[in-house]
Image (cartoon, rainbow over all chains, first blue to last red; front, side, top):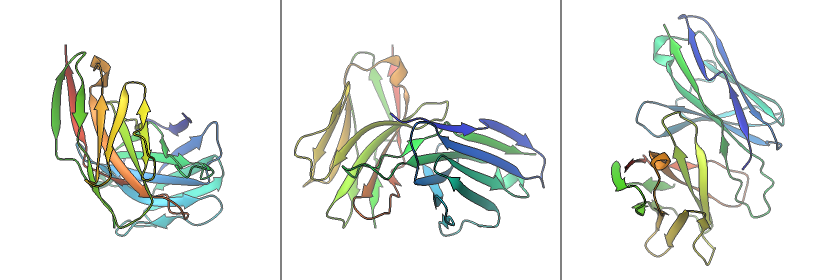
Length: 119
Length: 116
């Protein structure tokens, strides 16, 4: 399957600082990327959908000023957690879809996730 | 709106045995896709298998097969000859096909433990 790289895998930061997470599709062009948040022993919660070259679409209840998403190219999307606080500590995972599957599967391939700990 | 229900929070299976993980869904879409993902303790989500609502045959991928019963709105994952490395969280998901909305709806997951 397609490969999605997510970096960093783990980050610890002080309260009030900003953290940037990168998501790259390595062997395909991702017209659409997704950012999820996952709490321990829970399912994935979609935060936002980003399409290359346009503004991200955020899910209800997700603060767009808090979670800045940029999808500047067909292979890279970034999530910046601004002024992070302990309640932002979580597992963040991205996925990418080429949107060009003629069978319309448009499978989402996931990165390995980023575990954020805010002290 | 779409909804995925996974009623088994946890399942246990002996190594080399087969196991079925349940998934039922609800949707008003005529055309949709069903997906299964595996999430080991390390966290990455691994795509396992896909079934389209109009596919006449059940999907198979190696040791994974999908028991798709459209009338019952179920899409159970069958893992044959379980291995210790199959121990993980398994998520069923779905999305509408067509259009440009690729959002997935996930179930709550089933934690599979394979015993030696």
